[in-house]
Amino acid sequence: FLNNLRARHASGDIPCLLDFLTDEWATCLFHDRFPAFSLALNAQLAGGELTEKTLVKVLDELDLRMDFAAEVATSEVEGTAGPQIPQEELIALRDRLRDTAQLVDPIRERLLEFLRRNTNILKCYFLPEDWAGKIKQAP
Image (cartoon, rainbow, N blue to C red; front, side):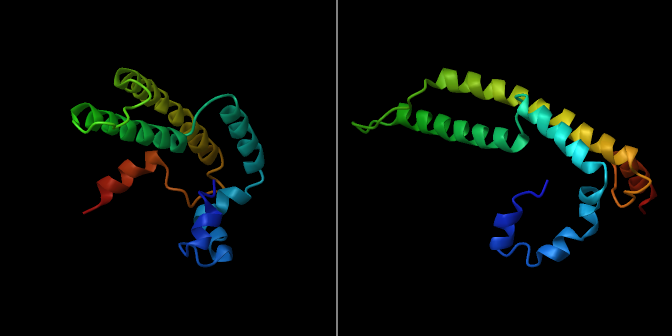
């Protein structure tokens, strides 16, 4: 939930941890029901579901390997090592991983459900159902 807080602080993106953690976005982290929500979500993830971040990394790596395979296939340089996985297998694996990216939606929905159930206390969050109303009111 803190999105690589340590690395972002070390790089200077977050100059003051106290200011960052007391900003409005972090209100739900200090809600009395958030630890139970977090534990349930961690159990869901531990059950084998992949996070979007992991999927993006894997897909990027596969795209790089596929690009390399295409270069090697068209290269006439002798001694160039080819890919270790045939391109057809890489394509099939990439397509299967793209299908599993849909696992992120249930996680997002659980978080939105938590925010909706606790709207009386967590008023600072702008939920998707509020977007349409705000957009229509814009000049």
